[in-house]
Image (cartoon, rainbow over all chains, first blue to last red; front, side, top):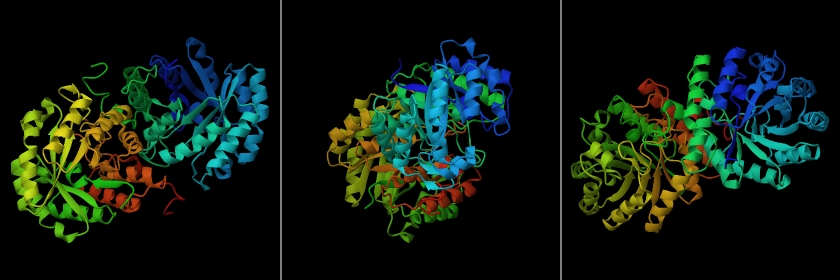
Length: 301
Length: 301
């Protein structure tokens, strides 16, 4: 077990807004990610293929996951239909998203935040009947593009109700990349207070350059689970040039350079970033990737 | 006095590797920076015009600084010749750079690290005779591109000797953008231990995405003085696409979004970034700039 436990989300959050690259290219990408040593990969989402065409091959991807038996694959779902599709495909580690704001929840899934919370219990029941594991991701945990700042206590309230409703783990998501360290600390302290002994992860975007600072603030608070994608894949279509998820290789460098083990080979993470950059035909936002990697002489000159 | 005291270094560190933009454009840039509310600006360096053509107009810029009487302007110097030029131009707040490694020191100024340290005392004497203020910047405080990792104790040793030699203030510089939060904490703790009651600033580059995380780690340790440049100006010519200094607007957002006053108007900082981006004819690396600014609804919708 590494000191810090990173979940690679490139194949899902990274690719979801990109043009479809084809299932074979995606499997090649997953193979490159497995080679980094990462032990958890969010591999797809079971959502509407019309809404997210680039993940329309969720079943085809799921059918191939037995190639990599040592990795824990998970998928994102937005409702009961997706849960059923995922379980039928053999994917039993699921992440169900609940937006903390009504504006985003309606825009994203056509339900209020409360209606999404009400679905946690039946989803948890279905997942547990299949022997699975359910993480609830509280999205829009800091700001909503429609409703403005999210009250921090609302995030803790959703976290508490998710656990009462059967969630096995939690994540807090800065969905639009507006969080900063002081607010990250505030929100996470409130969530940790209602979730003793529960795994709490953090999902960050680097849209405004705050991603790693937020990760460091969370680490200082005791958070050990982070989502990231190689290359910082996942830029927002409505903010040209803006970064996507925090970059796996930058997160790995931040920890490993200080002697904190992540279990991930930074050079293989850079290789995976270059591979998906070629498949997408675009430059990715990671600064470490642009700089060519960690300093030389360094850990692997 | 703001809770965090930012020094804008765009006109010096930001522009030094760029093509010269002309003195008038530079003065327009300085005017835009003053309008942000920043109280300290590193405005030029008095070094060889052959080595740094874009700052060859140091005297011409210095002659105009009386336009902005409320701002504290400083300049960087690399030796006695530069000190004399600066003082003759009426710039009396000076920063003298000492590289912690011999490899970088020789490449940068043709002297060993020890030879550079030996110059602190005569430089301090000259500066103080003119009623000035001398900050010593310990460069290459983390890694050297020639000599590898810098021993943290070497940075503290140079800091201590700078103070013995008459320096009024100190800064620690991650010159090539390789530092990470755990090492930043280690080096700063050692420097603070030998510099009780002395102003200690931090100069960061965002080359590998670590800039704001390092700033946050330093803030958590009690550091309140930071260098930055609007737009993240100052990319390295040897690392295409790599970021330069940490971006002023991202640093301001990190603090102000959490209620920590910087005295800087983020929207005017973004305006200054756009201005210098137009003068240089290039896109700057700041993520906040690319994203269009802080979230809306936000502090100034």
